Length: 325
Image (cartoon, rainbow, N blue to C red; front, side, top):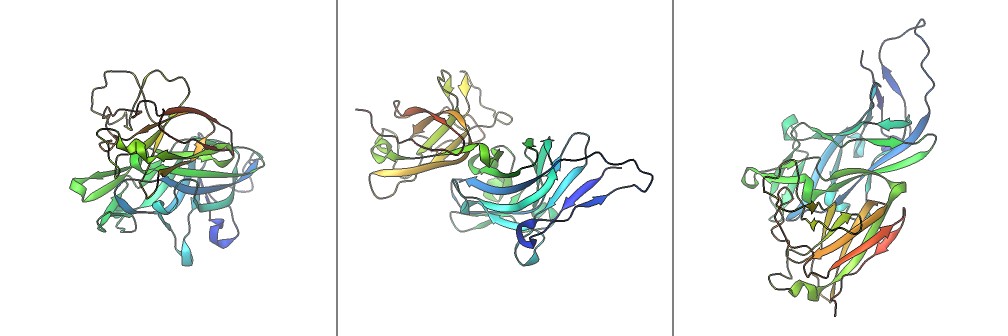
C-alpha cells in the first residue's frame, strides 16, 4: 500500500505533527531508523514582461523518493486558509516569501518536488495574471502539478530552499491573450546555502545602439561557464522550439530586464543563482525574444558588453556594463 506522510505547515501554526496513513500493527516489523532534517521552502521570482500581477495559489508541496513514501507538506495561508495565494511579482531578485517553515522530513535524495496549484481546471479562480492593461486573465497549470525535479536534504541540519520562478520562461500566454499557462521550464529549486546573487548597472548610453530603444528590449543574459565559444543564445525551450538552429548555441540560464529610469544608469539583479562560473552579456535588441523559440537575437549588443564572473556561496557580485572606449 502506498503511504503518504502529511506534515502541516509551520508557517502559521508554529508546530508540526507527523501523520502516517498505512497498514501495520503489533506484529509489523520495526521501521528502520530515519535521520531527520528540518527544511523550509520559499518562493522567489525573476519578472515577466507586460504583467502587473502574477498570482498563484499553492496548497501542497509533494516530495517523491524512489521506493519510499511520498511526503506531502500542506501550505497554509492567512486566517486559516488551506492554500497560500502569492503574487510572484512581489518577490523579485533576492526577495522571497515562505511557503513552509522548518518542517521535519527524512534526510536523503528526493527525485521530485511537485507544487500543487489551484487554478481554473479545479474550479478555482485563485490563480490569475493581471496584464499591463489592468485586465485579470485566468492562469492555468495543465495538470495542477508543477514537477520541478530532484534535490538533496543533508542529515541533521536546518536547510532553506528557494523555488525560483523565471517567469519569462515559465509563464506562457495563449488563446490570443485569453489565458496564461504556468509550466515548469524556468523554475528551479536551489539550496540557499549554495547560492549567490548578482547586481549591477547598465550605462543607458548603451540603449542608444542602432536599432535599440530606451523603453524596451534591454536585457542582461546569464550563461553557465567561462570561455564560451558557441553562440550566446536568447531564451528558448528546447522541448518546444520549432526554429531551425544552424549554429551551436549556449542557452541562457536566466535573463533580467533593464528598465530605463531617469538618470545615467539602470539597475539589474539576479538572485538565488547556484555558486560557480558564469558569463554575463547585455543586449539592447531583445524586444522580440520569445522565451519558447530561438530568435537569433544578437548577444551581446553592443558586441563588447560581455563579462565573466565567479561566485562563491553567499556572495553578491557586482558587475556593471559601461561603454568601451
